[in-house]
Amino acid sequence: MDWRALQDVVAVAETGSLSAASLRLNVSQPTVGRRIEQLEQQLGAVLFTRTAQGLFLTELGESIIQNAQRMQEEALAIERLATGANQQLQGTVRLSLIEDLGIFWLPKKLAQFHQLYPHLSVEVNIDNKNINLLRREADVAVRLARPEQPDLVCRKAGRFRMALYASTEYLEQLGTPVRFSDLKKHYHIGFDTAMMGYSQQRKKLESLFAIENIRHRSNSHMEMIEATRAGIGCSLLSCLVADAHEDLHQLYPGKIYHDWDIWLVTHSDIHKNASIRAIFDFLVDALEEDARRLTG
Image 1 (cartoon, rainbow, N blue to C red):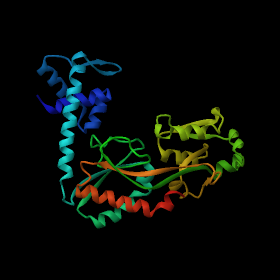
Image 2: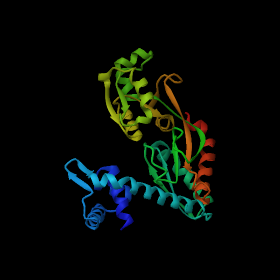
Image 3: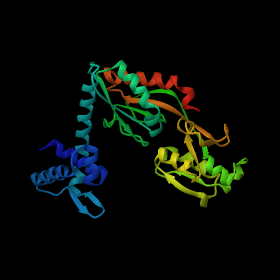
Image 4: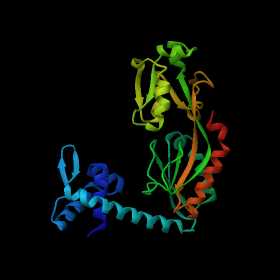
């Protein structure tokens, strides 16, 4: 039995489609489909029901998926242990972090890192959603909340502030709000409802605006920056990025803002790996050094 085919089954079962599974596995969609069909032929049974809405496990598929997931977890554990034992300062380290830090803060820091560690390469994953470190989707992640998953090594490394901003053009047209009640007459650019990490802050901020005036949402911090600069409305933006634009102005300074703790996270099995420890410690120092800049 081809272990790769079982990995494919797990990925399709968890994502619901061949295309999403192929992206997770970094394998072409036809390859994933072919390996699953070969496994079904070998077993003499169908594992998935194909529908217009996606692929769904059959009764047999449901019965074997937990065994396949356990096999995958054990294989990942072996991979993490092997990675953790590597003391060579070479190879590739995978880093995950949000847009604001990944685009506007990280590159200059990585230039310094590569001078210190010329034989290490860094693969950067920009994503505002939390990735799964247990699945080795990244080696090190920068998160805005302390993870609750077990077996993770976490280190607090400063704070990250977001505040309410509007553009020069927008304020010239609609005026600068003075009282909180003035926001009822203003337009708002909000977070996409799927960005659950911001749910409480989003609800509290949006309550200051009339529902009908929340006329734009996004799952991208960078798109929200540009939408605010275009004059669509007021938005909660990272001070790190917004303060770099002369046409953006903070509203209610010191009154409407939110600070998130910044956490560096890696899996305990790989934390002792020399390369992973090198970038982990480097980023902790860099974030602590830039504490004032990150909080506006």
